[in-house]
Length: 282
Image 1 (cartoon, rainbow, N blue to C red):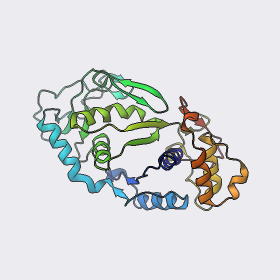
Image 2 (image 1 turned 60 degrees about the horizontal axis):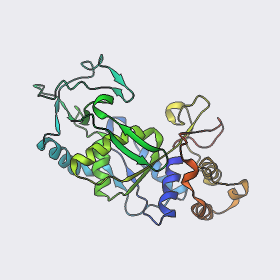
Image 3 (image 1 turned 135 degrees about the vertical axis):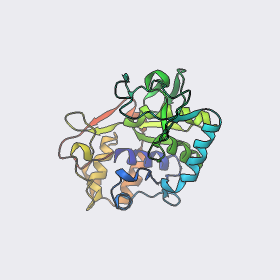
């Protein structure tokens, strides 16, 4: 919720376009009808997007082309390693560090496709969190862009779709910031532009866990969106008082756009919220 509100305010307060993309590229993990619930909730809360809703599953040809380009250029290769094969490899801050087992070829009939990395720092200046750098080879190793089950990986899909949609600025939760250097690496290999990035703090519970379905947070209330929206605006450091709850939804958004100051969130990674907060998913 916080990331959606922040991204909408950032786009609208700068006369920008706000795009809605449903990232439906992992059918085994998707709940039937979840996309309709997302769209309905956004409509209830007064979000207005530009253009048609883009379903990422419709971009399969675009994703295949990007993978082919990486393979043809030698930047990507087949990897037959299973999870069991990699169970004992060292772990870094991003998870298991792939040791390059299949870099020089694999005879496996079932395989993923990995992209080659190196140890040159991949750096970017986040609009809120400042300078960020990763050395991909030593911190994560070559990473998967096409899975063994035939599905495209998240990093490749979002890079291809961002470029195809001419996305110039990405506003999302700080929990995704560690993914950004891998995406920038892919952008560079594919000759694609790198957008500006703004990673906003996430809402957390008393244990410091991000509020989500996995941590037991309830769904965002859909009956009257105004109280929840006001709570979100306060969490984003806007001076929203209780009287704002009585205003029309459009007026609340106009009030927030006129006062949006993302610099107030600079360096903030988490926003603690009480157990009764109506905010649940950022």
